[in-house]
Each structure stands twice: as structure tokens, then as C-alpha cells.
Image (cartoon, rainbow, N blue to C red):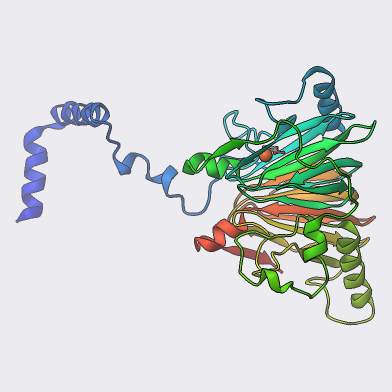
Length: 365
Ligand code: GTQ
Ligand code: FE2
């Protein structure tokens, strides 16, 4: 009887009267700051991720001259804090985000310039595609920045940068700023207006304590949320990749797919990712190699460190050369191919996805 009574009600109310009542209901919803699910569900709960961020390529040849120009026109100092220029994904409504979770920027420091010390809850790293001469001082420990190095500034560590040469230097920064912004987790404190230690050691105290292969100092046996290694030096990354490819050529299982060497930067106190929100890896494809087409939940950014190649993102194919930066939004399929060989630095929000059990991957063999 209940089904017939509903039909009867509809017939009784009448079509135009019902429209008017429905319009009134929607305007009452609106006035009461309520939104019904049924008008939003396709957007809110897609059958699979439908990112607003789009796949995009930034050319180093375009970024670097603009950063140089900013170096001429815009001072660096307290207030603005950093001469960092964010890669703004065109799908994200003008926000300075490369993806919904990640910030990527080119940072530029002119000769003898200093970016003052500060600390924030956001986790940060730097990757150096070219140049040297800047020391980043992390909690009073001066860390030299050189080509191919991957440097960490985990959340709430004081850090400032100073260029001790007569040459400018540019590098890329990666942070979890957008994730922190959406989740309202941000805290910030100013530190010294300069840097607290102006010495210029080749090797940081952090590396002297933590960077002896396979050896863990007994003063550091507790698990830490972020890696205590301030800098992962290029010579080790390069040697690891070179040896994977040599071992592959000798017939040993050392690569995940033919001609594709890869390493993940890890936290030696957990063997997990370097920071709670950011995964970082380095990949090398030998000449003629290509990767499987894959897609992952979460966003990935990479920078070409050396060589040349071709990235296929969805149906789009782009030539890449040294310094170019690419963002792959969630669940967009992509692959890489190279004739000459290519080296890539990559980072992603995979630790967030895995920790929250949102991670999913599809690999097309
Ligand atoms: O170098 O401390 O690109 O705090 C964004 C925020 C760099 C930094 C960025 C930062 C920094
Ligand atoms: Fe910072």
C-alpha cells in the first residue's frame, strides 16, 4: 500500500505545484547552508579519480630566465622569506599548487645573498639540477648544495640558505604546502635574520653521523618520522643506478623492468619514506628503454636531470630535455621512453596515500 500512496501523493500535488515546492525546498536548503548529495554525487564521488589538476610540462629553458629576472627585480629577505616561484597547475584555479597535495618551485639565490632562517610544519626538500655554491643551514648544520644532491628540511627544522659565491644558483623545492593548507595544519616561526652558522664545510654533521653505508649510530636507534640525513649526495645515487644497470647486463636481477634502474631515498631509522608526506626517487633509463604504462592514486612530479626522452601522459606525447618538470595527476596513465638515455628525479604524495589506505596502482604489462 505504501507504493500506491506515493503515486497518489504525486498525482494529488500536481506537476507545476510540485516544481514550485521543490524550488522552494532548494532555496531553503541554500538559505540554511545545506546541499543535497543527489545534486553533487557525480562530482563528489566519481567512479574513479577525476582530477582537477591537469598533466602539465614546465620547461627549464622558460623557468630559469624568469627566475633570473626575479633575481634582478625582487629582493630576498624577511617577510617574503624566499625567492621561490611556484609551478601553478592550470587546472587548480590559479592557486600556487602543482597538484592538490604538492608544491613545486624554482628557487633562486643571487651572488652572496642570504635567505633568512625560519621553520614551519610543512615538510620540504630541495633538488639540485645544476650549479653549486649555496649552503642550506638546517638546525645550525651547514649543508652544501651541489648538482644531483637531494636535501631535506623536514617539518619544524630551522633552515636558511646562503650563497657564498659570485655566481647565482637555482634549484627546485618540493613541499606539502597544499596538503597542509587544505587540512589547516600550518605553523610558522621566524628564526635568525641571517644564518646561524656561516661556515662552508664540504660535508654536513648530519652526513658524518648518518651516511656510512649500512651503519647506524647507536645514538640514533629510535625511529624518527623523517630522515635525519640532511643530504643524499649525487655520487651515491649515480653509483647505485650505474651498478644496477651493470648487474643487469651481467645477467643478475637488479632492475624492476629492462633497462630501468631506480632507487628510493629512505629514512634510515624506519627504512620508509624520507618524510611523512613526500616520497622521492631517482630513475635511470638506459638508451632505448621504455617504462610500462602505469597509473597511481596520488600525484607525481618529476624533473629531467640528464638526457632526453619522451613522456606519454594519457593520449598526449611530449619531448623532454634537461630540467623540464612534469606533473602527473592522480590516476592518469603515463609512460616514458628514451632513445639516448634519461635520468629523472621524481617525488610524490605516495606516503599520504599509503598511510591512509587510498593507494591503488595499475600497471599495463
Ligand atoms: O626554502 O624555506 O619553495 O619555506 C617554499 C617555502 C621554499 C624554503 C619554498 C619555503 C621554502
Ligand atoms: Fe622554508
